[in-house]
Image (cartoon, rainbow, N blue to C red):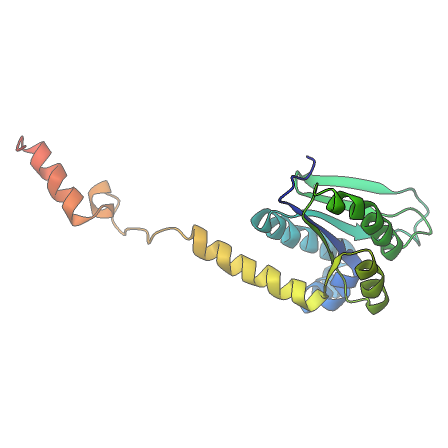
Length: 183
């Protein structure tokens, strides 16, 4: 889905984030890199949907002998594996350069890059992109999860299995009147 003018594009340096978030480092060290990648992708799926960001999570493939790969997770989230010999930094810088024109034409509202790599931060800011550190992204993701829980929290479930116990007293009284034929 092409981004609308109200959407922002979020580019995430995947391995940089995995190395910076304690929970993802723990997953990487205990269950492997693949598990940490998918834990990051799951976190970004909810975050992107709630924020309305078109998100690209980018992973280096520079040490693997293969061509680039793109996995579409949903309409807002894709995962990119770079070409052999290409770093995620290079991919993100090229994406920022390409997206700069779309921002100028108001096709997208802004470009945000999530990484704690200082050199990359300076480079993408030169292209007009905003920068978000790995720690800031972690905080925003956690805050978004809390907001989602609060927003979509279900009402307290009634302990009774009857519908009447789940509605308020006024509605229960009105239903009793209707049942008894009182108008």
